Image 1: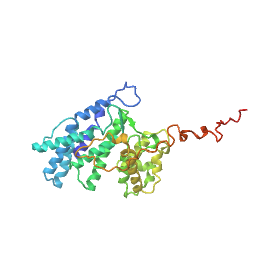
Image 2: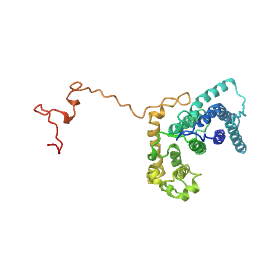
Image 3: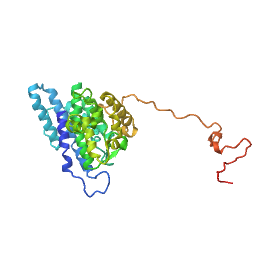
Image 4: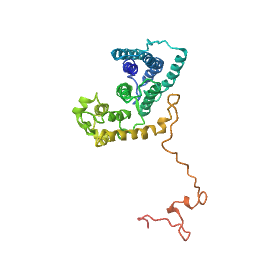
Length: 341
């Protein structure tokens, strides 16, 4: 996990090394984002390979508590160097292990490439965010994360928050177009998952914050780095300053009236399932392999096509509008306008 965090820290600096084209005339999508994405593709094997290699080293050596912090720092530094394009870590591996590692890299690369926006359309949306979630799931299936709630919670708060910083940099610097945005009737122009994760984090919080706390500016300023949900709300308020929050984000404003964070989180999960995972334009871009298999059961049963035919054939009585039907004496009497004489 530390290697992935280090890689994301390094990727945050890429926008400084690849500045946007100031002469671009498009409202959305700076063409220099394509160069940023080219670097992403070029360094994928190094980044993903470093993550897997560090995990293999951690599994092969018993790390005690005293050396744990130094190993985490070392792993973070390796991830940072990988983002810079330096493959500094070459572990000793058998040919079978190398083959397995390369297969995992190939599958993870597909999800990694789709996690930061589309280089052709120059947009970013919840589908790209979902691809990053699949990327994390693939690493989990590969054994890179502990299958315990404590370890997965750390992955969510540490990794996803840094991923959010990288993506926000891309959205603002390269002016990526929101893909599938619902405008003011969405949570955010680009994201959905940080709100769900943030609401889960606030369940039974020690400070006693409830959903209405988002309207307290002091709380947002003091706790935006600690609580992911507050950070997202604060970011929206800083970005959309032309109108009150209830007008720029009516959906989030309505959510603040819900009693508990448990209800907020369950509602946001249903929203993600329905508006992201339940939408064909999003899931049609997913690819599947050994780590992420297409073995699920459909949530909704497809509706059968109508089988009823015209009763009286094409052009029968049921095809005629009621006002165009003939009267009982077989005479068609059109209705006159009130002013007609």
